Image (cartoon, rainbow, N blue to C red; front, side, top):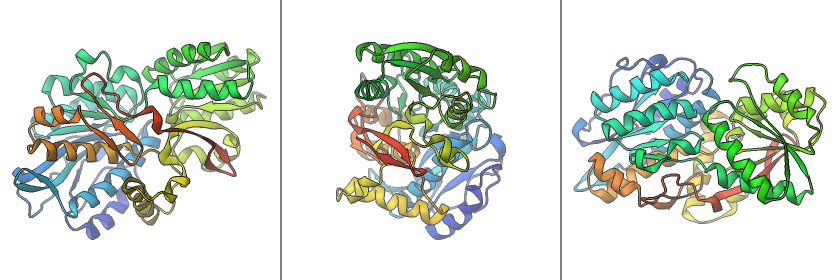
Length: 407
């Protein structure tokens, strides 16, 4: 099987994975342009497939997270297609139509429209950036196709009346903020500066941290917004350190998180740094970032900690197998939450329970799923579409260049 999406080292390994997977099905298009590449030929008739459209940031500003989710997706597809997904009286292969949205919301929306109308996908997954996810939200609602977002930002699923086909895999901002605020308070730190990303994710962080710090009786000394991805964060870092904080919370996704921490250190700040879950990516601890990030804390789903591998539950064993396959394919696993794996599995489970690939029935069964995935526990309900359970979150610190669980 060949693909033409450029800019991702993972794509060069896909051929090897497909060759060994047998019934592994994945269709990709180059640089996000829908319609190129064409579907993969298989022995399974197209009408008997569970088709999922995926729009990811394989290149551009969101690639630090997008490529990792693509790799996770490939491993889970290999596992699912080894036996197929029982849907009614058929055992269906899972077919993914993959697009690279390059971090461009307008392109993501065009891709989603093509996937929903022309490719006839039964569900959509994607958008590791809040802005691309929001573009996909509009299409999902208009076309009435279930969409599972991989981005951070509570506005993706709120207001619920306007997000009836939309679900979010990542933790809610409020849950992460409360864990961070309690940690700050437990260390007797009284003044906090907040550095928050530009956009929807940062908006959620400012609101959540403001309330959580107030409840924890910790003073918010300043709240400064970071520039867009790729722009110099030094001015924002100087503004944060100018408020003379005891601690700094950086609320941003990779690669902005490590860049912000580096700017803080260069500005002379040597105090504790606290991060939300979006900071965790392989890039965060690569190269010179490892020294910069040493001692930083992050709240993150428990999939990040190696201690989970000692468990013998089915979910823990699946997670162990996932990490083994990831290391086998990519040479190492520095930790992240494989939301794409869980999204595809949730869709497959919903189709199985619905005994149908009808979009409306998949949606109906998605909103009643309570299950433990690779990243953590999900509990979707008709009145809650942000499904990551707060009990799945842990606190981690960077120790000797790796993430270690604290609590």
